[in-house]
Image (cartoon, rainbow, N blue to C red):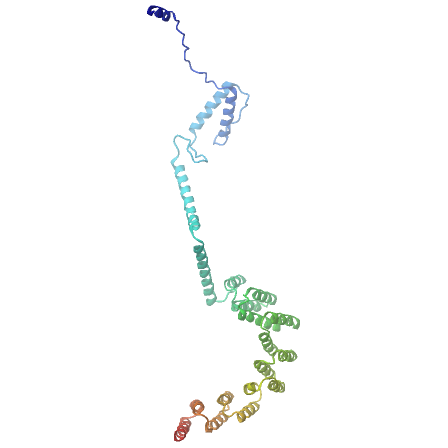
Length: 414
């Protein structure tokens, strides 16, 4: 059996092995054309441009051109691709440094953005408030040092202090100095719309200034329109009271009388209205009408207000009207109310203001002779001593002090 196996193995023919040869690495014609077109496109973007040749050239020509292009590529300077990778074997160090520096700058720019993102809502609001405070401080410092001298400066100032009537009035005065009446009106209109409705005093100041502007530079129709609008937007009593002074300053008697009649019809229960109306009539020289207003006031007001009313009208008569009429009113009051120390003091003060020193001394002598409670007599003696120290001599002061001592002795002996 062993021999037969050996014979069979020997009879087997060796299978011839295929010789390993190099594969045919020749590129097909179409692949050569594609590679050639790509090289031509790259070469056009470099320093030396190669003219595109006919794509139907022979295979040998294409191989030759490709080899030349490869040689030129090796000679070109290294470039950085758009993706940030170096395809060159020896990259340029300067380009690498520029790339790294640009990256670092981008990182620096991104850092504050990241910090802002990390801030909470409370911190951001605090930063905004701090900026607003700084701006307000700069604007206030500018306003204290000097007034703005341009429209832009005034606009910045009113933006920083929108509820300040002083700023708006300065803005209006700036336009009035340049005789720009319409612009001053526009500023007034803008002010009454901008100021917060809770700031009643600030709004009222602007309305008063606007009424003054229309009274001086406008026509009666425009003044009446602004007046009606101001009455609707503010406290009507304050607007009517201001219109009294507007008409007095402009010397308009008819308009003043109409306004007084309207005020008395609407606010006759308010004592201050009667005082204002009487004072305006006296300033216009209408003494009889002022006295008529006082008589109407005595009829309209309760009896508890009569003494103060007559005293106020007496003071106004002494200041704007007839001094004798004022003294008559005071004497009339003191004859009915001799214990009113406040009336004695008002009477003496009005005489001192009108420089009637002798009459004031006589009134004081009458006052200290009375038998009033010690508390009231102390006030009168103190006023008498102060009066003599200012307008009398040392002997007069000593005499009044002696009168005070005598009064105290009388009170002690009782």
